[in-house]
Length: 241
Image 1 (spheres, one colour):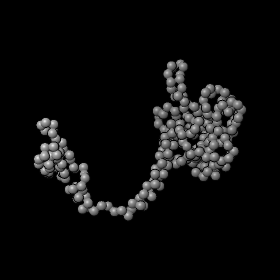
Image 2 (tube, helix red, strand yellow):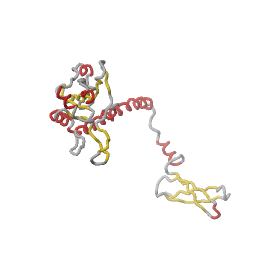
Image 3 (cartoon, rainbow, N blue to C red):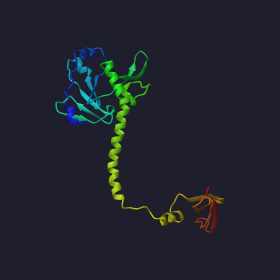
Image 4 (cartoon, helix red, strand yellow):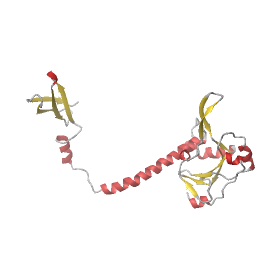
């Protein structure tokens, strides 16, 4: 998205109807308006603080631009252009829901914090994020938006990690695969997952240790050893299972 082009869009102003509605919304925090811009490729959501509307202030607190690939939020509490990259879930002092005590049901539950100004605008949001929504979503399109933003965050993180791993790959690229002789040595002599340390208890709580290197399951391999406790040579055989 072109930030300069987006920031040039006139800042929204609350209507008298919105100020009137704010007085009836109780403890909810934001009224949201929605519209499609840029040939319907971008969804624009404007967020008005209800407490500010109750005081007669008509300016929006922030607005978020969402395409099908990315999103960006503009802080409207400052006259300067200030962009926020956090998702709604990660934004400071904002949440779609609150966990509150329900006096009538005598239990705590989540309560929606945002109010969409009209059914027409609610439909615009639902249609825009239809692929991220499910029929049983309790909080309507907001759950779908959360899924979309989480997907974008995952892609951003993967891109960030790739920048670091690409540097490592460049350094490691000259290093070729180990030759066959090395892996033969690992199987026959070196440390591998086919090496077993077998402890067997004998009379008088004495122990001996037998080390078996098994390369193929069908092989019996015997290794002789000298027991440090019993001071004599012993032998043991094992087959890998």
